Image (tube, rainbow, N blue to C red; front, side, top):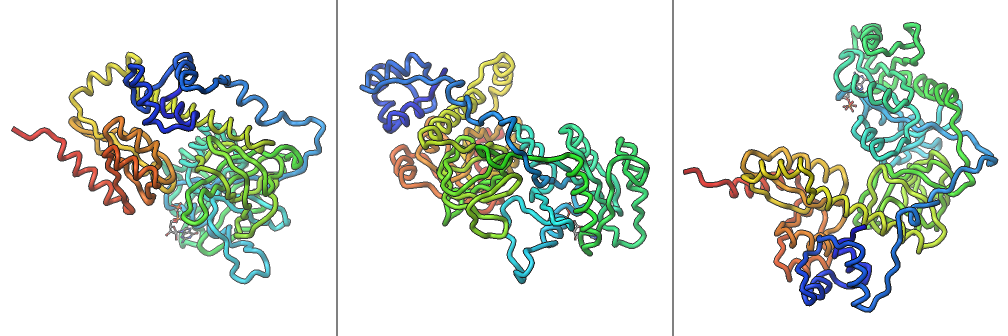
Length: 478
Ligand code: GDP
């Protein structure tokens, strides 16, 4: 079991720099992100007059999500649907069109707000939940994190374009996840399109649609002209009935994060999809490595509600940090329990990140030897939403060449904190804020330690500046 100096300092409610100073006095030269083993940590803690309570993994995570009660009454729940397909085939248009199918009756021009997921009513009056992130990137990354929230996948295929590479990828993702699919043949309003061509092409990928004698439902729609959207909703409803989706609405609630970000006025805002149980205002939740008391529940119509049951997407306020999409949430009884679990997970996360950057496997050593000639530009990156952070990291990594490259030490969503600065200081890295600022402690620490903080609000400017810095690091041509 390992703990970083920084983490240990936090647990003793002291500043990392002070702990580092204490360690120096004892003849140990370490940096904030150095790891200490449990025995060393215990000695230090006791030296400083604190008592030690070691916890093991099983203690912390055990029973966090209670076993299902086999005798509980299970009620039917709405299906959760993800839309995938090739670029430009109409995923976004379809999500928009479906979202407007029943902007609550009576509420003229009712405002649906984007919270990452929404619900609509099928013609039979039953609800369907849609994840409002088109494409398979979100689906795959959530699945990679163990979050299998999708019950049904809609594969959109444009009738005028037919089966394309991302259509095939989407089909493969749905199959790999064992999630049933429905084929939506879109853009049938266009002149001279032939839906049958699409159906025939699909046969090559072992997708046999109903109208070709198979079992996969196929529906012809136009997202643009809003044609046959009811037909699509009915197809989803039919598929949902076959799946017999149920949940226990009365049990301890748990579910998954769909989207999370830092809002200037409201703080940490996360959209959760409740999977079991009913989440209520005032509940204490632990979400990934964050926790908090649910201060408000806001539905996809922007209304405050008191509770949210199974399959309901709901935005919550009150978390102390920003979790990641795919993180699980669970309701616990006491704040102490929530804090314990969240802190434990945060530590695990940091250990994993450290292990990744300071690994010493043979493979990594070989890579390092080969890379010895390459100059690194280390950075710490904080952004306002996970999506932009990922996009920036992707672009920065693409700039690597034989001589120079960007090494991302740490990324995160939310304001630049003191620990970001300390981490940057240890590697002589700048901290980059995209649409976020540094808090007061971070600014003070940066001033003390001479860490540079750069702010950007346009990705292009950020990339351009880093490119310039990398160019400056190149050896002068002789
Ligand atoms: P995505 O990349 O899959 O999300 O596709 P979009 O929803 O952005 O749509 C790509 C383009 O196709 C846009 O110009 C849409 O207006 C157009 N489009 C989408 N659905 C239809 C449709 O049903 N009929 C027609 N004619 N155009 C459509």
